[in-house]
Each structure stands twice: as structure tokens, then as C-alpha cells.
Length: 103
Image (tube, rainbow, N blue to C red; front, side, top):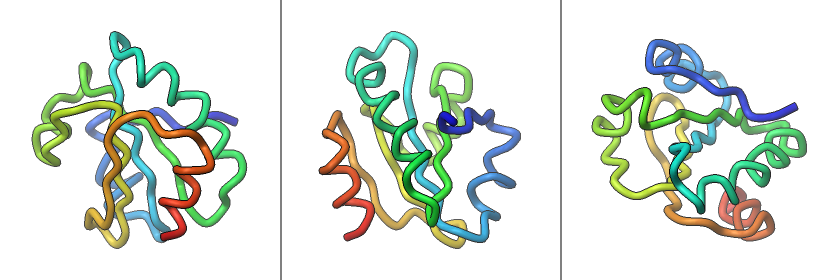
């Protein structure tokens, strides 16, 4: 199963009100590194059960990207209890992302 793709109107319910940490992949269809990262994010969504994984296309939902100061993509942000707790910008291989998630 791949990461759940959400829209701005789902962001509050799926991310900010989630009862577990949420990894949000901010991406765009024209972004080469985003295309490389997408299958990695999908694999993480299948393998990691204690973190919800979602994707948000910044082309469709620029207001969310602006609100969270996403100026470079791909951008992974982890939210816990409605707050950003960590951020990673750019492509990283799966082992590095899994280590980042744990840390």
C-alpha cells in the first residue's frame, strides 16, 4: 500500500489531529528528486506501523506549503500532536530516512 495522498482540506484531520506521529511528504510532479523519493516513502508507509505516512502535492495545495514554510522539495516533515517536530529536505536513501525517523 502506498502513502495516502491528501489534500489541504484533509490536512487537519489526517495530520494535525492524528493520534500517532505523521510523516508528510511534500512533493510536486515536476520535481525529479520527488519522483525518486516517492517509492521510498511508499515502502516506509508499508514497513513502519507506528508512523502514519501521507503525501501532499504542493502544486495543488500551495497554502499548506506556505503555512509550513516548505520552500524546497522533496521535504519530509514529521508532525506529532499537531506540531512539527522534525524536517528533512532533499532526497535521502531509505536507510537514512528510517534512521532520521527513529532519532
